[in-house]
Image (cartoon, rainbow, N blue to C red; front, top):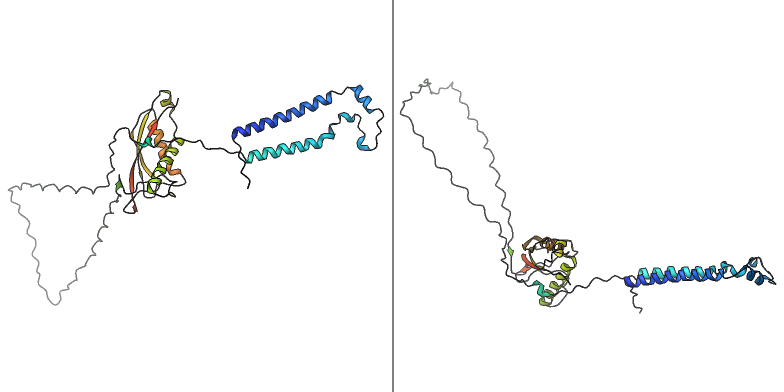
Length: 302
């Protein structure tokens, strides 16, 4: 079983330079060789040579470059095959990022404010008390209506009263949206993806923390203003890991300025673009929403 050929970027550059130098060297060598013949040498070399076929009818056979055209053709094929092999074996390696789990330790205590769930609306205010209006003592004489007889005889036509349909009752108000509770600590905390195939929960948690730090430090861009001013420190973020593993409500809890907090927030929000989402936290065996606190350390090298 053959080992897969791997060529790094430096190896590709070195092979390319060697092939170019070899080609230039061959060209220079053959040019000098054929330019070394003088006309007298060529005339003396052709004396007494008997031509036996049309293919040998060359004025100066010693400088006939077409005799080595087959060799140059084979050399060109060799160079093309070498370039193809190198191109197919070109291997790029991801930059290895050294992570330290101590970076996840908060330098100072941070007051974690748990988002409150929706509270029921307050009851409506009581109606205002009725206004008592003072009635004047003026006596009002109403006109007496004309008396009409209410006697009913056989000739009296009695019409039945017309019953009007009652209007339909108004629809009930829509129910208020129910927001699920957000937990701070659960039986199984959410985990960064990529470690669910390990054995114990502790191994999964340690692996998930390392992979999360690798992802953050790989995608985090140190702001130029912070780098120029030598700003270092720890930024603290909070976000909610939803029941489906998506990251929501990312916000900056502690910032060191110069755009460091915004840079870390962009990396956290970019977790939703990963091919695999977080493993959600669980409470009593069911997935729940969990508030996650993440410290991100900014440190200049050198």
